[in-house]
Length: 172
Image (cartoon, rainbow, N blue to C red; front, side, top):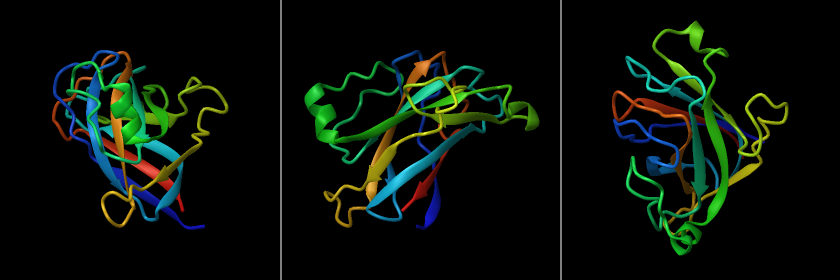
């Protein structure tokens, strides 16, 4: 099976995000095939003063459709159940900043490591994401799905709207 890495650069707001706040709303992911298995997720904050610190965690929600917003950025995610279901959830994972893992190696960059939502990042099974991404047929070809981020723990505060990059490793 072929593999691919896709980097997305969602637009984030520049204020501190409290737990439950929308960090970035639905962002398109152009998949290399209609269905792909998500193998890993790595994020990095490239701001001159990185806004993520040890323990900051962002929940990622993957959807097939972009029917409704999760809510206003930097405010509580307040999507209705009906709208949430119309987006067609594909799966979730978390990105967590672990300062002692890699951040000390590169100045001015903070890394966020993907792990499943049910376990702590230190658990042996934490990197088993078990998410299949599937493109929407609403937009034509059917290779586009969407991701949104909601602050899960601690607070993230970015310097610029383009400071967060997320790398998805896929098998298809």
